[in-house]
Length: 233
Image (cartoon, rainbow, N blue to C red):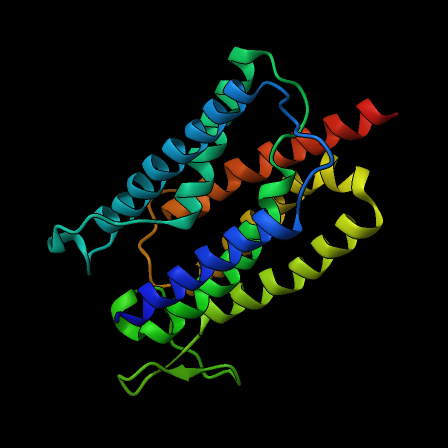
């Protein structure tokens, strides 16, 4: 079995288990069952569209991959797509407040595990970093030491998962109100930073397509965190 697929399945499995058996709200954020199922469908459709769109755009803008005619996928794109679709759905259905808190634990641990799959897949995954002489340099098989940015992201998400556990078990109200936007803020910020260590082509302002998308997510997260803070006051 492809090692990347193996870690993807592991990430999905662990994420599903956490959602099913561990992180459960006392009451659903959306009471109506039909609306809740429609919400899930919008999230899934948005995630699929976003993952394929952003992943494929990255291939288009990458000189090394442009001729491969491959359809790409991106976890960042999945997050963006799901978020956009859900925000549109919430506006249309007049749903207020954060509704994504209980997805966060699964997303965080899933990304941490999934990035290990990227790391062990080596050069063919095209998620490795640029060459480095630092202590963290890793040879992916071509004799060059590169930044293992997959591990940087995996460790960051693993540490954030500890914070997620703390909020969930100790400060449930803050967890439900803020954790989704805190996740978006942290993920987008750390991803923006790690992208400077990747060999992707820049497309505007010296930034690659992932970084431009991350800036949008950072603005989105800060807006809703500020809004939630003042609403609580």
